[in-house]
Image (cartoon, rainbow, N blue to C red):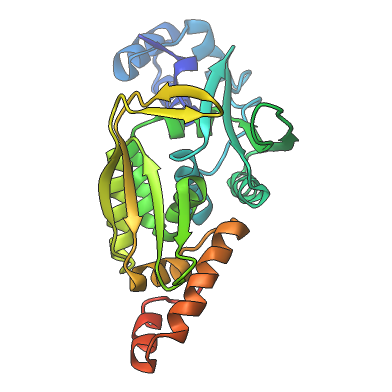
Amino acid sequence: MRTLRDLPPSDVERIQERARQLRESGMSYLKIAQELAEEFNVSVSKATVLRWCKGSHNTFNKTKRVNLEPSPELAYIVGAYLGDASLSERNYQYRIRLKVVDREFAQNFERAVRAIGANPRAGFERNRSRANRWWVEVTNKELFMFLKGPKEKLFEVGREYPREFLRGFFDSEGSVYVNTKDPRRAAVVADHYNTEVLKLCKELLGTLGIHSTIYLVKKKGTKVMIRGQEYQYNNDLYRISIHRRTSVARFAEKIGFSISRKQEKLETFLEAFYSHTSERDYHKTKSYSGGRI
């Protein structure tokens, strides 16, 4: 049977409200505890029920609540989480952390986290053995449980706000390749081990008129050298690729990157693409863009 600590605050709030309803119907505190155990598969003591019903204890006094209703900011957080962000729990401290090389990415993630009501911390970490990193960290059980929960819930947020979700994901995992000899040739790609996530990205890109393909890039067991050390892939690694010129242009204009070094490459491609595109094709392509975000 679960304990209250195992549950996200939204579920505890629902159980607490149910306890008050049962008390108003005349049920005893012990009977309420038994009823809650049966209805919610959760262990709640008689003493806790009593404090809830008398109003002498509020489970959420020390809990920072956040807004988990679908929003552009939450979609960006979800996209970034499915890429670079990580979760950790220790001694009932529920931590979400993002560590990246690009300051703009960290700042955008911090703004999104703050916009849903959390209080993130941010800083810069120097590391002699690898690239220095900007980091953003927030301790919030409600957001932690949401991100750790069913992926379909996260995917629902992405489907409501596809542009922001895709920007968060591609800020996290995306790369841009522009041919130096012919800058009209370019591709936007992102690698991931989870094909479900990539299939969602392909679906959302499709709704925006952006063609993409998914394929295997590294088989499980493939060896790779990283900073002089040999490693091997523990799982198959897949890639989503946007390489049709019109689709790269639409990605640049409808989604883009928060990270300037990546966005600048897209701007180089756009300049070359439109300078070699006929007036008719130019307007046809622009009709899909809907403006920059």
